[in-house]
Image (tube, rainbow, N blue to C red):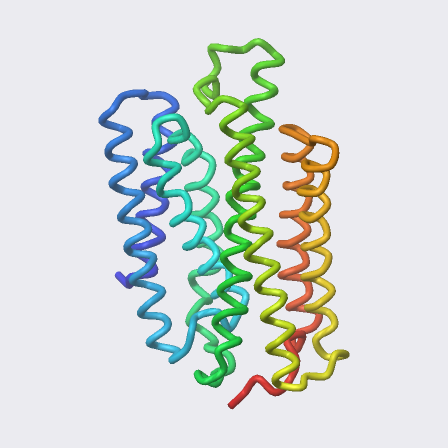
Length: 272
């Protein structure tokens, strides 16, 4: 069994254990869940390192590789969330989603290495890592938004004995959502600035990179509006959660759609 296959299998097993916590609420299940989750992250890191060695570059040259890396960073971000007692149950939302995403992309991460980027161009790792980390944080914000909306509905319906009644308090979810949203926005902004510097250094034709630039701008604007409204008129909770889910959905759709419709959206001149 290959490392990527083993990684996916552990993610799936971990998903089942986390879900079982909804029915078997005891400390043993929690400890097993946390240990398995650390195994997921460790194996995932090893698979990424091996993939990078195989393709001789940062494994971000294709959509499957980018999604694979985004899931990894989101998993790393989720480590303190899972190890905090009040937010442990959020793993029930995240781990199955991560396993599903990996099941779609892992078979294709090493099939097409893509262009080999000049290792002496510092813009490439700075740009791509900033953007992927920002997208991972937006993914964490989206997962938190789903949990917030579910918990809010449980409270409104007065169903305090439901399986989801042990979700974190709305105030905790709102704080986590805002933190992930803000940090993701900062990372994406840095990535866009570095990307512009990269394009300028390579003297890329604006026409060629316009689809990718527009995609990034649309995502940036949606989350910028969300953060602005929170500061300006005090958006909290439900409104922030809804616009975060809209922004994340648009981000995923545009990321995949633009790559298929405009495969050269990063422009020419990236080869050494």
